[in-house]
Amino acid sequence: MSVKTSTLTIDDKTIELPVKDGTIGPSVVDITPLYKHTGKFTYDPGFTSTASCESQITYIDGDEGVLLYRGYPIEQLAEHGDFLETCYLLLYGELPTAAEKQDFDLRVTRHTMVHEQMNRFFNGFRRDAHPMAVLVASVGALSAFYHDSTDISDPQQRLIASIRMVAKIPTLAAMAFKYSIGQPFVYPKNSLDYTSNFLHMSFSVPCEEYVPNPVLSRALDRIFILHADHEQNASTSTVRLAGSSGANPFACIAAGVACLWGPAHGGANEAALRMLEEIGSVDRIPQYIAKAKDKNDPFRLMGFGHRVYKNYDPRAKIMQRTTHEVLSELGIKDDPLLDVALELERIALSDEYFVEKKLYPNIDFYSGITLKALGFPTTMFTVLFALARTVGWIAQWKEMIEDPSQKIGRPRQLYTGFAERDYVPLGQRS
Image 1 (cartoon, one colour):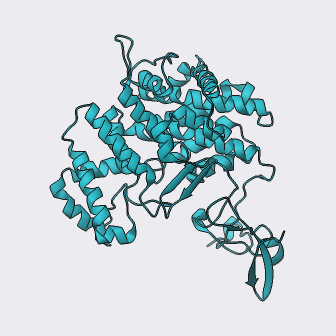
Image 2: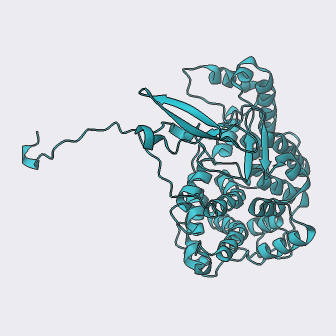
Image 3: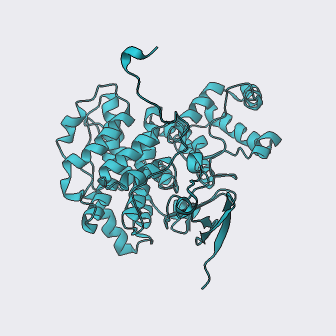
């Protein structure tokens, strides 16, 4: 069978580079032998045209607005499944049978508690510490408490670490929330499903009974599904890069959480909500649309457009419906933020400026409104994102570790600093 190649000519020297095809999506040119034959690297800031790995987990077609987990459309998973079923799919590659689902749910539930000494670890933070700062530290600290699942060469330990991360991240997230508002920690309740248990740990207090609302639990569960993985984004690439050095899984996930904290990544829904609050009412929208179109104005419409999606974000459609369900269940009929959001969406889908630039609403546009309605402050938005994305990070880390071709990540650079120069003694420097 003939091997597809691409011809590249540099300085009158021509080399043949292998071309690899994926199942779907664009082919890639394998530039591994480039430096060996030409003495040159490629230059691709932000890696916008570079495939850093081979993966079977998530596929995105940004032009068509498609997102697949292991081949399954995100719309179908969010509509018909639950988050733990999605976790199983991402980790194992197939949807579980009824027996496999029951066993997986049980294994996750039995790992939801964290070591009791973690309570004292939390007490070391300032009372006003940001929940994301607490989460970064506490996730990394898991490696100090669970030594029996840090040997990445042992498949069984990798599996245990994977289950532990999926199980314990809601507990840590809820503890970070409780600590930030000065309330006592609440232990997991094994009789509840995954998302209801998280809501229970977040909003119950010892002095009264808390019963999770199934409509709200289902809405949050759907949000978790939508955020579970998103191909080789910044935080996932960070997890893979950290993992390529042989770091333990808890340290790798902590690195992913830290990367997610950036406002250009996980903080986008918080920024979108603040923008809607700044606009305030529908009658003020025209002036903000004008500001967005003005090249000399620094104002940007947050929650519109996407680095990958050049069409309507498929997750945004599901998120819009979920937002309405939550507001209806809570009896919020006239929400000014939602009114502003819907009018902005209408304009973005019809205004020539937005259509031409493909600035469609993305998932962050709606998720901030929903999370606020559920009772979470903006400081918790990225924490919830990290909770959902943990399973994607773990699946990507696990895939990388089990890939025989993987090696430690080592990007190259275009050096533009000083050429070699001689050291000048301190007394002779002018």
